[in-house]
Length: 356
Image 1 (cartoon, helix red, strand yellow):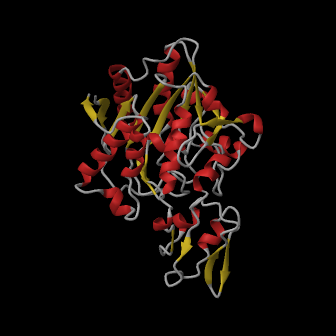
Image 2 (cartoon, helix red, strand yellow):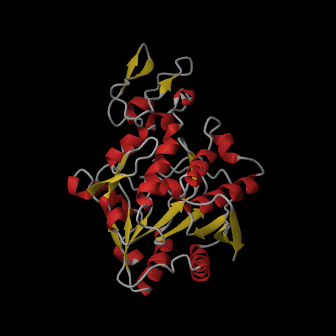
Image 3 (cartoon, one colour):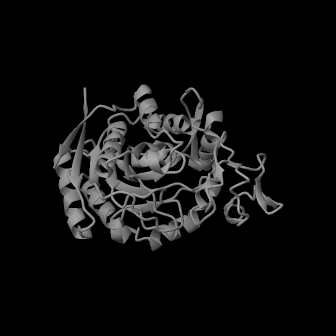
């Protein structure tokens, strides 16, 4: 049976106010938040964007979502987790400050802004899942203990998974730092010496100082590397990549297994919104303003994270007239996450698109 994905078109010419009105209608007519009950504590999972990045979903749109949650007698908390890579989102204090600078406050959104400090053991939880790669997932406790989870994602490309949407927002986004490390553990990038110019951008960006310079060429220490892929993203000469043929693609499987851990016990209490606007090559973790690689598409809503990601993937590629994600990340098979998520029963790749 097909899952329903509700869709409203958005163009670059639309104002913030116009998009907010379209979002409100989408939520009302789709009924995607109908599962929320009075007294629920609802974790609204999103990405606050790295410093200098403008691709994240705007606070004004979170206001629309949180107002509907509040109207149902529930309490919304807009939440994100800390990162592996170097930047202002590696610890809760700076992460919260950056969120505020990007417009996320209780006054602006009608919800509390939360970034749990997962360096404290009481803020994480181990969830047994006994999957192919992950036996026990390490999740930020806040998401596990919430009565419901609403995923709000910026749909865009991604350097490790081809694209990022609802599934990545769950699997990678709700993991504690130890869980993110677990997902990246088999990924140690290699440097193609003939391409390396010795610019040292990778060494400066590495959060664990795993990169040194030898004979004016970068060298990665496999013992220190945590697989965060920051070096791949910042290299201006494409001299660094993951040896995918050696198992690097397993990161997508691990991410999906983590998504299953977040969804465990939340059956019927999940909703997803993907904003396929300002679609960029890389995710919002990069501290720069990435240009568009596709026309703006619109906003999608569904209770099925697999269907909503597959619909976004199809709509973007239809608008571009080709598989833009494969073109941007030729060694990544972006469909892999969708196929495995369906295999694990997280959702359905077969969907019905309902345009509002």
